Amino acid sequence: MALDLYDDRASYVHGASEQPLIGATIGDLFDRVAAAFPGREALVSCHQGVRYTYRELRDQCDRFARGLLAIGVGKGDRIGIWAPNHAEWVVAQFATPKIGAILVNINPAYRTHELEYALKQSGCAALIIAPPFKTSDYGALLGEVCPELASCPPGQLRAARLPELRTVIAFGAQRVAGAFAWDDVLARADAVTAETLAARQAEQAFDDPINIQYTSGTTGFPKGATLSHHSILNNGFFIGERMCLTEADRLCIPVPFYHCFGMVLGNLAAVTHGATIVVPAEVFDPRKTLAAVQGERCTALHGVPTMFIAELGLPDFDTFDLATLRTGIMAGSPCPIEVMKQVNARMHMGEVTICYGMTETSPVSFQSATDDPLDKRVATVGRVAAHVECKIIDPLTGQIVPRGETGELLSRGYIVMLGYWGNEEATRAAIDDGRWMHTGDLATMDADGYVNIVGRSKDMIIRGGENVYPREIEEFLYGHPRVQDVQVIGVPDERYGEAVMAWIIARPGEAVTEGELRAYCEGKIAHYKIPRYWRFTDSFPMTVTGKIQKFKMREAAVGELGLTAAATIRTA
Image 1: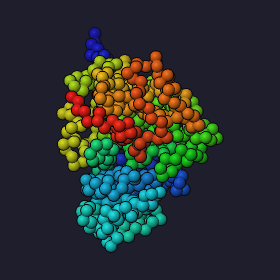
Image 2: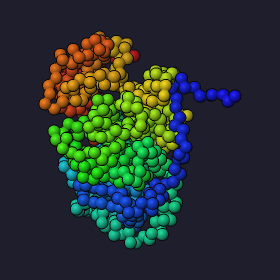
Image 3: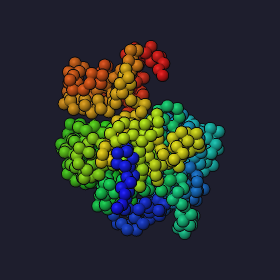
Image 4: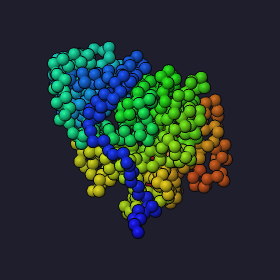
């Protein structure tokens, strides 16, 4: 009799799969898809009026790749891209892997100090910049960091503050002194043959580094997570598999390309399935997003919870025809159950999935399935991704906790980054000797392997010895009919160490009071979980990708509530 050696009482899972990992570079896989679906639309950029079939997108990528070779960009060179969502971003994403250049994603919200840090830390030899957008004149900002650009020939920059940067490429109608225009690079492609590009492409290996993405850096400087062809290509593919994507799907991507959500969960998930990428606008706009879904007959839509909340909150929401929607992804931060239910019902996204992960894991390690029971899709982040191992451990002992108990979530497998670029110390702190990536997130795992993220280990509130998980209180308060959004934080308290505070956004046209919310909590949640402090606001501080910056909320609360003295009390 065969022994059953699997212990399903422990919080450990492995994503067994009959579908093998793809052993190919991004360039080779992209060419296969383009050959299979040459006439299908690959990319629609609504705000630019650009439409490319897969054949046309491949030709654009090949031409840009040859142009990069012509101006001296090659294997291992870091090439930054500092831009909101444009068609050129997608072209750069699929052109650079063909020549082995490492694409460095730079947050378009960065200003001079942050830009200089990212370019210098990664050692960028080239930089692609977008035309001016809103308050960001990328060419002018770059000129503040390297004034030498204005007086140098294109490709011959010698900047005191950025000694490795040689080449700047500006796309759009702009003309930036000292920079190549995008069309100039395309024109120079004639100097490099298709055979030369094919030979360069054949030299690439799927374990090579191909992308550097800077983490948010809530404390200290951001760190550059270095990802390979293998990690992000396979992650994009298996994300699309769990969404049941096919070449018939049209995916609307309002999340930023510079972040893993747009680049991997969006562009790579679509391309690995021959689906269409639809770009509604340079940056998220709820009305433009729904207009793109309607106009392009999109079947899938991505977004962080705050984006879906904004879309659902449009006064004319019901005028948009969203009947073509089927699936999509809600991720980036904890997904409120009530919002998920509305997305299912009012946006026709009955097969919407939840994803969880981090930039350092390419990024997705858990995802719900399109046919998961509703309670699993609204209350968990799904089950472990294919070919990925995860475990939940006691942070103090390192031992795996029993199912149902809270601990830190760790992941291992092809998804784990190669390391932080140029930062071995930080890499060793994040990835242990067993190649487990420590997420810093607190989670529980149920008997069926579904995982629920209960908060960040650093966000857990310890009130008088009681562990309080903000997510639990947030989910409870979302159930109030006049609450649109809520975030719960811990603030210093002289007696208990920490006290609970809730930031509340009321529904449009509604008003809600502290007394009403306290009464709503009484008798329904434990007394120590009821917020002591309440703040009513119109917005939360957040990153460009929609992640709530709770540390900024704490800083504001300490000042507003006069808790400076309490904040200075040292704890063990």
